[in-house]
Image (tube, rainbow over all chains, first blue to last red; front, side):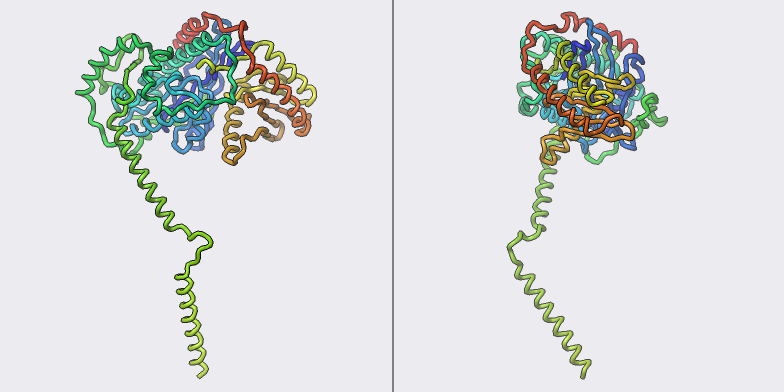
Length: 387
Length: 163
């Protein structure tokens, strides 16, 4: 929730970096911290585990400067990416004004990317925010690694909300600023639109949180609604303009598209992309020396757009189209998991203790019999020893 | 998204500041911060010059949110008062009108009992102010300049070019 404080002459916005574990969210923040002018950034705070995995959040205040007499500040947060910390992620998303989704471009991370995006939609909805309304930017990180998906393919399977997307190599600082810049613009536009709409309205009560319908439910209408009402997303005209290019790209992609690999749950993650610890804020993590540096030569040239230093793609992918073979595969896996879970519960039920009040006569008879036999044996032994 | 903002005007802050000043005089606390639930500082009073109030606000809001989640797991709506004890400094945090946190930082010049007692009073005072802010209409009041978005856009361009 944007806070406009006319006494302090400040506008405060909250931006959250979201994405699967080890996708580079904290690295993004460290690069922003390292590159931003010293007088414009505050201290970076990182609540991390001993092994430098984000435990709660990383926090970096950024001061954009005075805009129309108001100091405009962005507070950047990252969430812990590990599945285990879902409750924490939900807390960090509270009151977010914009989200940067950092996806790991590696083919082996497809399942994690999709799960994390689904999780983002769910957690936003639980915080009363509709994912199709909030400013959202996608970042395809780790472009320098081998075995990565093409940006077009990433767009196809992850860009469900026609969000602008950027390529990045966060450990080297590439694409970090353009991503944040684009989101900052969207957030400011959002504030301006709200300003124009408001003026006579009653202020919100934080208490009254309206839980929006789940993203799956609104999926069908979302695209139409967004292009009609939301100005935070690219206007229809711009989407149409780029359609011609997209079409040719899509055709190209169809011929180039890599065969969809079977997404496996227990795949290995590329550990090399992780960077060392940050708690000391003035010493951002350095990339490890053994990072396999692969130049972008392998990537198709169509991903580059001349007007920007990095790529901005606005693909009009319909939600149904986003449900590509990978999603189908995931659905299948989900069903399998549910089935296994069902069997497990049944097994547990079977093995569960007999409810109180019922008597197991079979057991009692066996025990009594056993007791009689033992007693007889003892008596016999005594009798024979005496004689 | 028009309802997605929280606006404080100068007279709101003046009114809040008066209550906080009275509290500091009575309780002998070092300083007091009013922080919204998203972690943005609303106002501060007392000796705050050496404090990184921005980070403190964000961390305390996070801490409160996490404690609230724990409370809900135990069937409580929230733990409305938190207290952190240190060797020299202590922090007392309480929720006001379910929209802001009063963060009181104090040392051995006062006691937890005093702070707690006055905190309850200040909480009542701020509750009515915050509720009136949330219920009023902002018709005819100061708004962001119409140039705000354009100026911000060019500021963003400069900022990210410099970096």
